Every structure is written in C-alpha cells, then in structure tokens.
Length: 511
Image 1 (cartoon, helix red, strand yellow):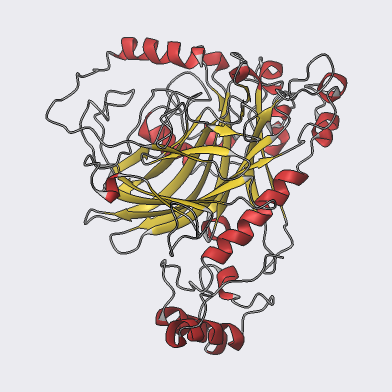
Image 2 (tube, one colour):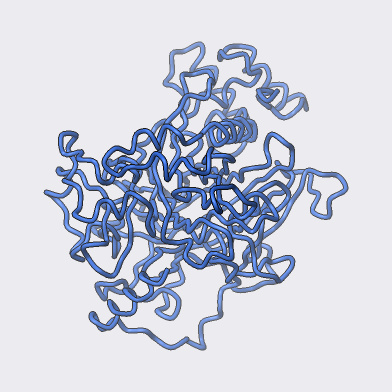
C-alpha cells in the first residue's frame, strides 16, 4: 500500500488538486460496515459500495471491533482482500461518467447512504431464514441477508472531490439497492452472493452502462506487513454441468506461493484463492472484461497488459499502462473488451496474440506484485423504470497451493506453465457452482427479471414456449421444476404460486 499512498500524495501536489475542508452544512452519510460471519468466510460489506475492511480499519456494525475483510477460513486471521469497490460507468448526454465505491489509488469514494440513522434505508438491515435467529424474517433468502441502499448523488467536494485532472465530481444520479446472502451449510459456507439493482433517478437514462468490481487483495496473514507485494491474479472459464450449455467466468487472486514456512504449510499460510464471478443475465448476455494491473508511483512500474488495438486508440495520460485515473480512463477500461492473460504469464511474449510486448520489468510482475483487478461487464441500459439487476459472488477456494515447494521448484517467469498446472481450482469451482445454484434458486420463476414473480412471468413464458417469442433474458430461472427443459410444467408451477397459494418457485436443483 505504500507505493499507492506516495503516488496519490505526489500527484495531488503536482496537479494542485483542491482538498476542501469539511462542509458543516452537509450532514455526514450514515456509513456502515457489517461482516457476513455465519459461514467459513468473514466478509465485510457496506452501505457505500465498498467491500472489505482495509486490514480492520473499518469496524463491524455489530461488535464495534475491527472487521474481518475476507477472512478464510474463519478465525484464521488469513485475509484475501484489502479492499474492493463497485464501479458504475456510463454515458449521460455528452458526458462519460464513472461513480466508484473505491478506486484504490486516489482514495476516492463516491457512493454513500443517506444520513438519518433512524431511517431503515440509511442503515444495513439484517435478515435470517433461521427461526430462532435474532434477525429472523419471513422474507429472508439465506442464513444471513444484509440489505443496503445508497446513491452517487452526494455532490460535495468534502466527500466527492475532483478527480486527478481537476474536474469536479459529476454524479450519474443513480440509486443502488444491495442485497447480500450467506449460508452456514457445509456445501455453501465459503462464499457470499451480492445482488444489485441500479436505477436512474434522473430523466436522462444511462446509455452504454458498464459495471465493474474492483479488487485489491493483499493476501496473507494479518501479521505479514508486506503481504500486499506478492499477489497474483488471473481469470478462468469453466462449465459447471448445468443445463442450457452454461459457463461460469471468474476472476481470481492468490498469494504467489502460499507463504510456506521452512518448506511446510502452517496455519498462517494463505494457501487458498479468492474468486469473483458475475451472476444472472449479465454473465451470459454481456461483454465480460478482466483487467489486472500493478499500481506504482513510478510510471514504468505502473503496468498492466494492453491489446495493441487498444493502445492505438487510447492513452491513460499518466505515463503508465496500469492505473486508470479519472472517469474517462476508468470507463475505457471497463469496456475495453480485454480478458488479460494471467499475471504469471507477464514475462511471456504474447505479441502474436495481439498484445503489447512484455515490459522490461516483466519478471517482477510475473512473480507477484501489488496487483489489483477489475472484473467488468456491459453494456447495460439503466433507466428510471428499467433498473439493471445482476449478482456477483465472492468465493473462497481452499488448497489452491498444493505442495509447499511447488513455487520454488516449478516457477519460471519465461515458462510459467508447469507452475500454473500445479494450482488447484477445484475447490473454488465447486463453491462457484453451488453459488450459481443458490442464486438461480433465489430468483426462480422471475421470467421477466424484474424482481417479482407475477402474472407477467406467466405471460412471457407462455409466449416463449407456445408462440415463438424471444428467449427470456435468463433461461435458468424459467426451469421451475429443474428437469433441464422449459415446458408447460414450469408454467403450471408459477401459476400455482401466483394464483393458488402454492409454494414459491424453486429450482430444487441442489442435492
């Protein structure tokens, strides 16, 4: 974290960015951070578009103690996240705008809740499906739900300062509903699902909107003050075996070697992996991008992969190829169409595949660095009555690093293949697969994908099955009886729920 702080300070000085005093007339937003801790991960979420706890700098809303960030396993003090944030970008009129929960470099936060802590919408509400739980609620969907609301409309320089170019902050004018879920069962306790619903509160819709999830992992035991400097990141796509020829795409971060101690694994060793994946229609109907970079105050070390075609049409104007400063650069990265090669391959020449040549410091990047990534998807349309609805899962995977000597024995920056083959993604893929099952179950029967199951879903499904209408936006939630096909029986299931008081449609796909 040292490099980014130094650079932020230097950049502000060089550009004479105005840092205002707090405006006493603006009531501070009621920021809250709460930890999902019913399962085998301790994951801190917020009501301001921010994920993680900055090594405990944020306090848990329930205990008042330093919050876990993404601790795995629970109680181990091994963290897989420093901080992360939601990014929303789009075109409004002639402006290209991006609002972020955190940008990781200029320390910008542009998403906030309302101020009155006596109002439920200004707080994080907890719910639980457990009958004896203090948060039991009949509308809960998991062992622990958390519901939060926030916007990007706090346009005061004390809270939303000018960006690095000196341009004053301009909001997209959006409302965000965030609904997160976690479970405690042995097959479902190593991930947290977050559902988002984003609505425009302005008469002008947001065209070509892109959503990003920014992650700065800094993986390691809490006692390791240098854990930020040896992360590796990448992405992968796999087939979980669902109907409808589905795939799951995830971005991941891990420690470069799992931090063995004297050639052995210890409880402090971060052997696992953090994976982040989009859920719902956006995972199938959008362009998904994955970009990683290493942030550094020295421009030659501020680096990330670039396609030659993108390099020919865009310039970050920072001297580096890594950190996207300002709305224009953030939005370009969110929609650049790239799926970067894995960081372990940074020293491998990919020019024949259309990428820029490796950096002269490529080996330094390949063996682990202060890395962060952006998983993004779009384009989406966000209107006043047409919200963007999507899910994101944050999942852990255990035993990603198998043998404590694999890194020292196998890793070669010029030939990373043998080491890549030693990494075990099976636990992460299993957790992501279960998360997809549960996400689909939560939304089962919502054929129109508007957040409710009603007669409109019946009408749309009849049109699709019998009248040749276009495909519903997300086929998996149409298979109500989970037999692998969409037919009359699925219509009957929704009819029984809507008109006859039958059970809520659920896929029943979970063994």
